[in-house]
Length: 80
Image (tube, rainbow, N blue to C red; front, side, top):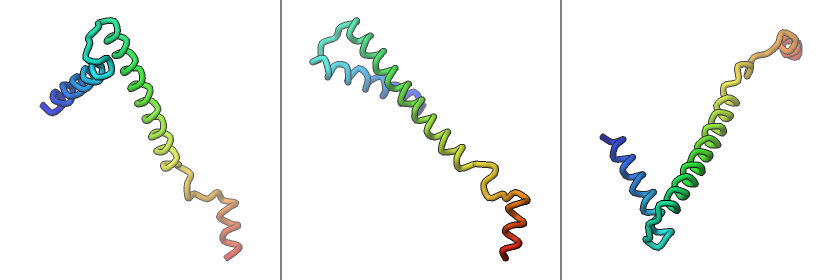
């Protein structure tokens, strides 16, 4: 049920945002353009956010972090 309420709230916010920006006048063509712009901006924002999170996760989970090569290990042992 929570997801249904979330979608209903989202639709209500979209319609309210459109009506507020157009002085509470409804026009099908303008509303269609508004929805296309909002969906495009939301989609691009989500893609950028997912890309940034993916890059951060990839940097943190580097498989070679903390692993020494044989040459580095012997150099490390000889210094001690």
